[in-house]
Image (cartoon, rainbow, N blue to C red; front, side, top):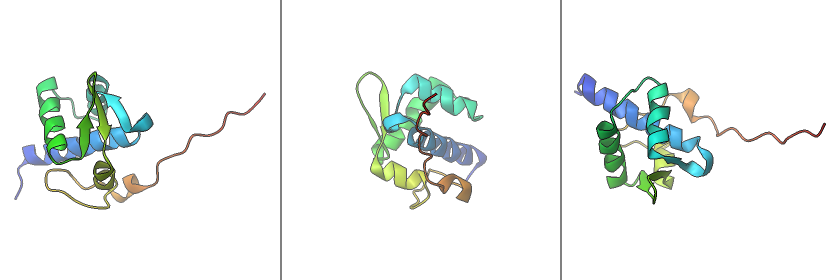
Length: 109
C-alpha cells in the first residue's frame, strides 16, 4: 500500500511528463517546467523538482540537456499516455490519453 506522499509524488511525476508531452519539441526549461507543474496544483521546491527529474532520468523517461533544458524520451511519452506503466508514476486518466492537439493553420485576412 502506498502512502499519501508517494501518491502525490507519483502524480507530480505524471504531471511533469505530460507538461513535456504538450510542450514544443517535447522540451522545456527546468524553471519553466517547475512553474508549469505548480500551476496544476503541485507547488514544489526546486529540490523536490530536481529529485523528481533525476529519478525520471534514472529510468529513461526524460533526459537533461544543456542549459537546464529537459526533454521527454520516447519511453516517457509511452508512460505519459498510459500505454505502459512504471512504479512511481501515476497512470493517466483516459481523458489525458487523447492525441496531442495539432496546430491550426493561420488564416489569411
